[in-house]
Each structure stands twice: as structure tokens, then as C-alpha cells.
Image (cartoon, rainbow, N blue to C red; front, side):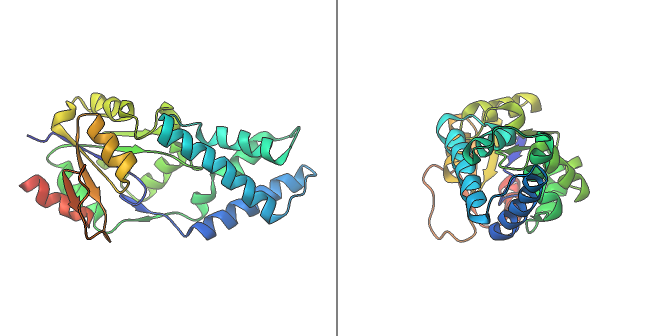
Length: 235
């Protein structure tokens, strides 16, 4: 009997705003902080530094299962730009991490109705690899959108250091839920971090892939809409 479902955040619960819009806003905010510090960098230089910081974090998460977190990304950014000293380093961190509070993501189709139905029958949790936006702000977004209360636990990689696909973050979550892995299922869009990560932790895995017309061998189930979870649970 299934006792718990854990959800990926990005492209599962939420659809992010266009990357170009997010990158542009973040670059503008960071640029203003640096100008206030008497430092001037063009958009391309900032863009290259952002990409370098994210690549390092992305590699660390997927290969080593460890998350340097937004503070690690900002430290990388500072080093990449050759900045020796900042009078107000927290201002730079805020500029880098609060972009999605200005350009919030959208709830994915069918999510609220699915969570309401599932929450009446089993425990729910979120397992999220954070990027430039820390779990602190993702919680705020979920509270604003009235999704927060559906979940017993929210596990963000920047807060626990461990990141998907490391099985440790899955095991930590189901332990907090009080459920054994074999009676828990994880849903997400990423074949590696979500599907393989969950399977390595002893959970069942649901691959959410709206545009895929093939099956992923490692996944127990393939669905194209979050609402299809209701049929899986009913079955």
C-alpha cells in the first residue's frame, strides 16, 4: 500500500518563467548593486559569470549529490568577476536570489486539485534541487499560491546540502514522513535526478514527461499530466 508521494518542484509543481526574462532581471539587479559599490561590468560579462556559477552548482548536484547553494554560487560569481571586496555583500546575495519574487513561476496544470485529493489519503512532501533561488523564497511562493499546507515536509537541497540524484535526500525525506521507501513514490521530470535518484533510494518513480512518446526504462510509470497521479493511486 502506498503511503507517501514526494514531488519535484521545477517542471512538476511549477513552471518557471522564461529563462531569458529571469537572467535579464537578475543581471539588472546585480548590476545595480555592483554600480552602488563602484564596480561596473557589462551585461555579457555578468551573463558569463552567472552561467559559470550555475554550471558549477549543476555539476556538483548531479555528479556529487552536493549543493553549494546560492551562497556558493554568489561566492563563485564574486571570484569569477575578480571582485576583491564588497561593502555590502548581503545586497549582492539578495539581488542574485530574489529574482523569482519579482517574476514568480506558475503552478503547473492540475496541481492544486491533485494535491487536494491526494492529501486526503497520504502524506505529501517536496524534494527540490534549488538553483539561484533558495528554499526560503520558494516556501514564500508556495504560501502565496496556497500550496504550502498540502505538504508535511519541504526538503530543499540548499538547506540539507545533499541534492538529487543522491539517494540520501530521498531517504531523508521519507524518514521525516515516517514512511519506508518501498511504500513511497516520487514524481519528477528529470530522468536522472528524479527517476534514477528515487530508484536508488528504494522508491518507485513516476516520470512526468508531457512531450515524450517513449517510455523511460528506469521509471515505474510515465505520465504526461500531474493529474494522472490520481489514476495511479486509485489503481
